[in-house]
Length: 314
Image (cartoon, rainbow, N blue to C red; front, side, top):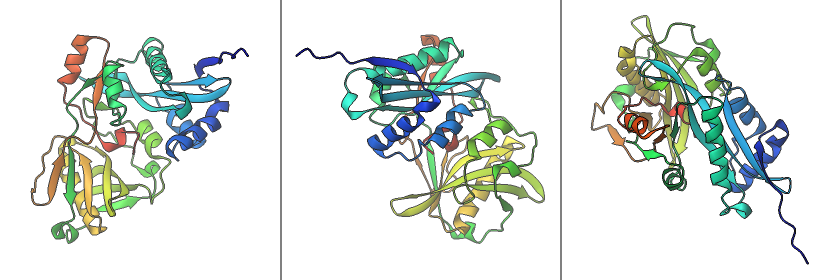
């Protein structure tokens, strides 16, 4: 008997593939987020209008896919297009055959050649990090510092100077400060990033101080190790000098709502109260890749400004 050769095909994702993509993600790790609605929103409605999303099929059966989503990013006061690899899945029966590698290289090549992406950021998990470094040419950078601010009685009894918005669309359309070396936080981006959350899934704080609007904080409740935490997804403000004050208001809100603590990525601040704050540096695998060694070195030496909302895992 002659064994028939498998028909292996690499192609861009089509709308008709979305059910198979969701099913594959569920089979591999039970990921409920990769629904048709999520994919439509996260990729097809991305405000940059660009992404790369490829699949591998064997005998017309979808066996894997890989994505690079594109974002506007401010680097040295210039707005560039960057890429972030996010979802890569290969069916268990098809692993070890180079499909993950081939899918990644296709998504990177198209990002560079067709969309003029300038460089790439990645936050791979522990299993994927060695592949990104050894196979795809990414470089490890200093990991963002995570700060945990614990519940405190002083915050619990502090005066409330914020109100909760029901939806991101209720944010006042003002001129907010844009951080350099950070994702572009335009109103289009904010509406896209947070429009699918319910009030229970995301708390949007409109923060004032002495009658002056300071800005907005986006907080996501999570449970870990049996405790309830808030994650600071984003801060937008009229003036970046307000960031420390806004973080204080976020701590107060978390304590007043009886959360165990607030988790945030360090911006340009340091833990202010060692008794109630702790920092962690090795929880996120941050990697970069550019078009040349000189650019890699420049990126490696850059102090980036991230929030948890910049990562698709939240």
